[in-house]
Image (cartoon, rainbow, N blue to C red):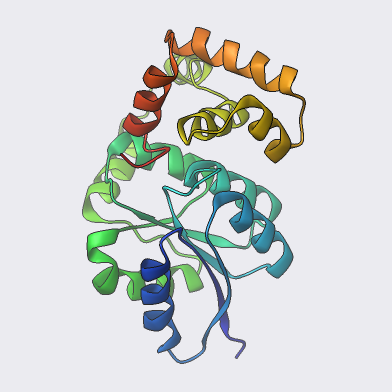
Length: 218
């Protein structure tokens, strides 16, 4: 039986080491790689093609929502387990839509991560009770189609969220342009669209948006 290959992505060395130590004790499980940022997590996932990615939601450069979407689009057989400090219904709904099928609150990592990964190894979901209740509610009481489409139209695009995150992390337009491989003019155009969509007028308000939506940690 082939080993379960796992990629761990967390920007905190202590957390990453703790998860690696815990998972390495399981027979037939192999840590095939580690990443400390969102872009690195995507790059290593595409290169290593792990069975499961254990992904901290609050990563620098690119948050867990966009990382999950990119990995699941490119590697549909790779499962994603999200480690998060926040168990909000809105966040869970977005991550479910992006393709994540397991959630573990960081304070419960030692107790829940093993059964979560065992479920994902069988391509079965693993949710906390709160997220399970959300999934059931969405199934029993789906929003009307027009309501879902109207809400989706108000959201930032994946690239816009990425730029918000980098602005909130203190990077200049020039640094963001270099990181994303686009022109400074393109970054500034995205910035203008973001300000218009969010109806904010300053970097401090953008930072507040990023914190409230868990794109960065306060």
